[in-house]
Length: 241
Ligand code: SF4
Ligand code: SF4
Image (cartoon, rainbow, N blue to C red):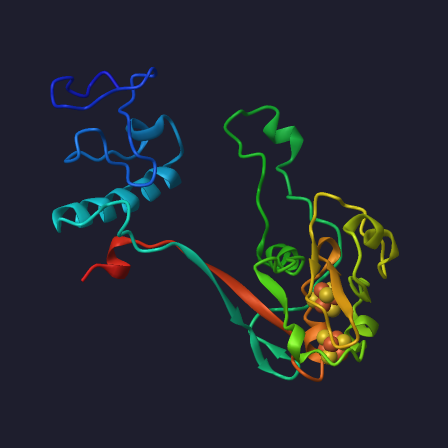
C-alpha cells in the first residue's frame, strides 16, 4: 500500500499493508480505519463491502467514545420454524432427484469461429425452474426437541432416506455402522439427541437428509420441526440510533 502516508502514526506489516485489528479494521492510529484491498490484501468486492459495514460500525462506536471491540452488536444465527399447517411449509419442501441440468451452449460451428460469441447461453425460464426444484433447502434444518418425543418411531418409518434411528447410546464409531442406513461419511457429524424416556437416543445422519419435512409432518408431538437458519450480520443502519 505505497499510497498511504508513512507519517500519520500507522504501522505496516511485512506485506506493506497497514496493521489492523481484523474484527474492527482499526489501524494502529486509532482514528483511522481501513477496508477493501488496502485492509487485508486483495479480496473480492463482496468482502470489500463487508469491510465497509464492519468499519462503519467501528467508526460509529469510536465517535461515541465506546469500545470498538467490546461493544459491537453481536453476529448470530436464528432458527425460525417454517411450519404453516400440518402439511404446509413456508418453503418448497418437494425435492426433485433428477440430475443437474446441462447449461445450453451456443452452436460450436458459430462459437469456434468467433471469439466474441457467448458460449454458455444460461437457462431459459423453464430450465431455470426445473433446476431450482433440485434445491435441497440446506438453509432449512431438522430440529429435534428431546422432551417432546414419545418414541413412536413414526418419523423413522416415513423418512425416505432412512436418516433417523433410535438406538442405545454408544461411542460414535460403534454407532455409525448400525444406524438405519450406515453413516459412512466420517466428515459429517451425527445429530444425536439427549437420552429419551426409554434410555435410547435419536441419531440422525445429516449427510443424506433431503430436508423434505416428512418427519416433522408425521410427528404427532412436534418433536421434529423444520427451522430456517437466518444469519444475522449487523450493519450500521440496522442498529444505530
Ligand atoms: S427431512 Fe425428510 S429426509 Fe430429512 S430426516 Fe426428515 S423425513 Fe428424513
Ligand atoms: S415421530 Fe416424533 S414422537 Fe415419534 S419418534 Fe419421531 S420424533 Fe419422536
